[in-house]
Image (tube, rainbow, N blue to C red; front, side, top):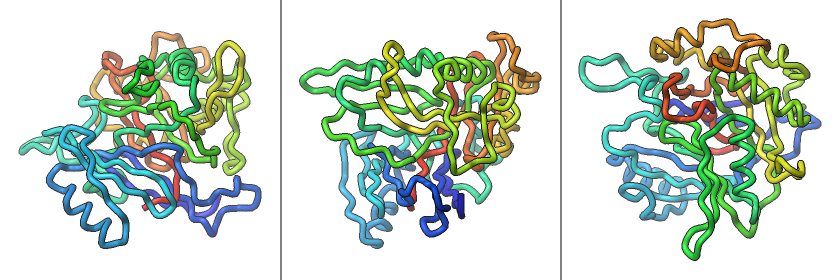
Amino acid sequence: MGALSWANIGLQQFHLPSADTLEAGDDGHPDQRVRGVIVLAWPRDKLAGLAARLEDHGYAVTTTTKGTDGGLAFRGPHGNRFLVEAAPPGVDRLGPPVMVPTTTPGAAPVVALPGGPSEGVGVRGVRFDAPRGTARKICDFYAHVFGARVEYVSETSEITATCRVPVGEGQALEFVEADDVAAYDGHHVCLYVQGDAFVEAYRRLSDRDLVYYNPRFPQFHYETLDLALRFDEFRLKDIVDLETGVVLYELEHEIRTLRHRGFDPLRGLLVSEASQEEDRPLTSSSSSENNGTTTEECGHSPPVAGAPESPEPPVAVSSGGPSSSEL
């Protein structure tokens, strides 16, 4: 892997590989395009300024009625689609409340990722275009592998069939069925997963031979659970039909534990129970009643894992954002 840049938005990041430094043997798609819409949250009073800056740089911006108070939509320089929505009142960061600092007077100072704070509130999620007939089975996959509290919305005359996978407070990956789905070009998301959910997910994927090794990062390999725990991460790419094994969707996931060094900038934000849980040794023989984890390469992706009593699923916490050459 050649040069890589990180772009912060709240407690999330975009990882941007430099097109002229990709090594021989890479996937051949230096300008990656997410198959869907990247949804960002922005301060309501800053939306007009963002629209003006985009237009000054030559991007066509359209207004939308989606979101609480509407927002704007545009395409990035490499064709990626963005939807920018006004953040709900009082929300200045995305992530479980127990981990996200407040900016109210007298409270703890705002914590930012390396590089400093951003104007944007965060990555609300990604709405991926998925082939017809796959949404329900994609939900089954995430529920089985990660124990995610998925939501399946069946198709009606007004709504397209959708699988929604919560990955943090106010954040989700959505798979929206579409007629025209582009070929996969190697973009990825990075998620933090709590405790034994990491261990169980690895085992379930390994049993199906679905643990993925990205040739861009030969220093990381996960043939065994002990290796995955050593690197505090593993990867998967193929989302499959649990009954037939047929690949439903390709999307590289970098799955990290909470001990991953990328989590370090925000480790101090964990509430006491989560901190105690995170301090426990994590081994391949951990009981399925414990929680905690770690991982590498996404850089300093934000954390957003809920505490053990969080209403969100044990699936993680926060996405590192698509790895696309954007912005």
